[in-house]
Image (cartoon, rainbow, N blue to C red):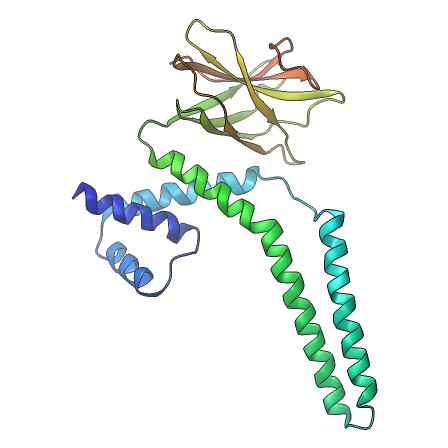
Length: 246
């Protein structure tokens, strides 16, 4: 039974990402319809995590190189269509409209494919990484509580002693000018270890996936402090988020 549920839970993650189809989709939906409480609860948990993750991601604009490549491709397509249209000026207006429609469709496909590759593939990889963290029984899910200048801030910290983790935060205003939010893990009888910097959007939400070296001691506490940009040796500024010691 444990092996069977491992299979269905893995399918739940793919289903939550919208990537399950065909016979596998039908089988999974039939399994849910059978009333399996374990998988229904796991699916709800997976959806909740993905919603948190989506809210923590920063909006991104395509870099200049991607934009230039897009416009170059669109320009080539438009030039080809213009040349073809000119050569067929004697044809009925219907065909000229058809050529224009095809050109627009081709340009749309180019834009969509490039944009998807740039924008969504990295996010799909991030979603999968967080889900793998959740699947591992050794992963801890620790709440974070506001402290110091941000008592209303809150968050969650997923952490695996392998050194991989993910932090979600909300209600945390942007860091002051010249400052950053530094993320720390504090192991038993050890100095705080810097594991990354988190940024928040206009709504105060942010997230960071962490891949750090494995610690030789179990982590007891997670914290976020305000530090001068580039200062990662040790925390010196006020604490804005802290977990309860385990």
